[in-house]
Amino acid sequence: MDKRLSWMVVLFGVLVVAGGVIGYTKGSTESLLTAGPMGLLIVGCGAMALRGAHWARRVACIACAAVAALMLSRIIQTGKLLPGAPVVALGVSLAAVLFRKNRPAA
Image (cartoon, rainbow, N blue to C red; front, side, top):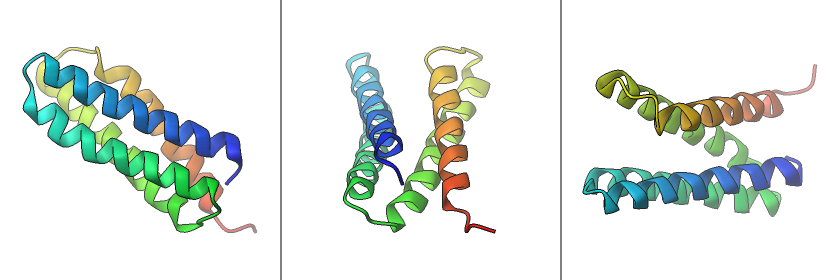
């Protein structure tokens, strides 16, 4: 994985953690307990990808898709587009790019 993509994964993980902390400050312990570990996992995958770990791309792809799916379910439950829509868009985009990078060359 190239370094720019790895850094984007790290930044997305930081965004997820920050969202969990913001949700916690607004009274949602669930936000911190869900977003904290997932965000840290994504940050760790990005960091490992920077070091050349090939498995980190696959794990990051799955984790980004999982965060996007979780936020999409929150949008459906609450009917509110913010803050979920940007997270869904970024998560799906990153997962798609990571998926394409993981495919073997034809």
